[in-house]
Length: 228
Ligand SMILES: [Zn+2]
Image 1 (cartoon, rainbow, N blue to C red):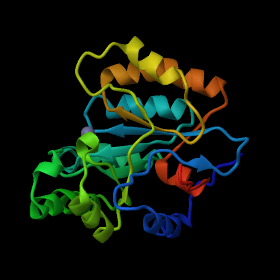
Image 2: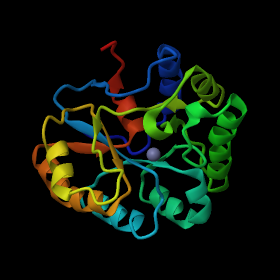
Image 3: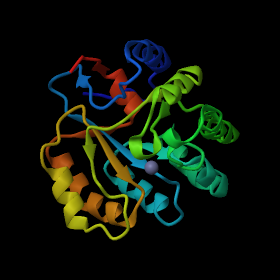
Image 4: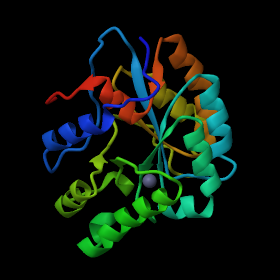
């Protein structure tokens, strides 16, 4: 199966999809239209991080893998060149808030600032992200309404690497992500050194199993939304 380089219909599809998602639902896993194809969306949260983002991009490149990076606005401000590199390599940037606070503990004005300030920072590097992942995956109705206002689609994940903390054993990540992966999965990882090492083992494994690696937006474009 060939994946289109540019998905023109994407924004239209996201708009339709957004209207289908009820207030409490976030995009986790979707049914890929072509049942023969094996597609997964790799996602990396909490970057960009100097010394991690660059080798991550080189590794992904080696396997023709495209991914979605849910960046933190403040960190883009510190290292805009890294976000430029991510985009130039054909990946996607998603909104992961301005400063990674637990948004459910903020009032709606502060929540709006966390979401909007990211969009403003992204605009400075020429981007208008369409995807949002909540810090700690915590959301509430007020956040969901703000996302609709900002035309952002809430994205969760179907598989978690549990790699956010320091010193996670590479083998644990490999074990978690090498079993039970299926087409349509959205895999949540973080920009971490141990994740990079785990991916050196996982990417060739997945490739051998016939998987292709796409951004979340590409996955949406190649899928249908089901109620499961
Ligand atoms: Zn995060």
